[in-house]
Image (spheres, rainbow, N blue to C red):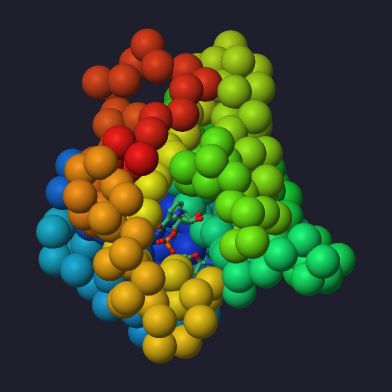
Length: 258
Ligand code: NAP
């Protein structure tokens, strides 16, 4: 292990090469965290982000792993141990949607994969983080933030009800694990974003319609616009920080009033 300081925040963000994960990594670096950048496909983007973080004076490593693959998740956490030291923060950010579909079109394979990434992957990462953070195992405690979605509470009829259900499971896990892990000095909380400008929408909306559909959706949001990844990062950073020291098992809506 290479734990350079007893007070440094060492934070792993899953799926951090772009979007909300990347914005969170940059904000946390500015707030003094060392970062482990997990990515699945885009090594170049992950490396570019790590270079930016090092330029801010923090340590950064990149680790390829698919959070749906137990062997790769084990290897991810071993790489963080070896590269940065004992973890104090985890952002369960990796998540997928799928092309819009109604009930009859939800194949077993699609729903299984959705839950393997959005729910099983999150549970596995949280288990391995808790092993490292738990005070009863010599850890320093820590904070975990789960990315949910407003879809968990609004549903997503004829779009991706499987995604909405997977985020409903995330909300319930945040509550249960928040209550369970606080005894170990680990605060678990969540963020429920509304519609945020990232590339994720290209995976659910028909090609060529994304900009138009998002512009339409923006009109239905009380604040009158989409959110930015940086606005979600602010909420995540707050939940990871001591400023939220009395917040446990909560999920915060960051959705422009939607
Ligand atoms: P994004 O731009 O599509 O980023 C998702 C990231 O997750 C990508 O870097 C992706 O990497 C990674 N990822 C996907 N599957 C993975 C896996 N099996 N293992 C490791 N990494 C994986 O989406 P985003 O908008 O930033 O979303 C981040 C989180 O916020 C997600 O959990 C999403 O559900 C949630 N959220 C987003 C919105 C929104 O409107 N944007 C709203 C509510 C909630 P690869 O491309 O390499 O797979």
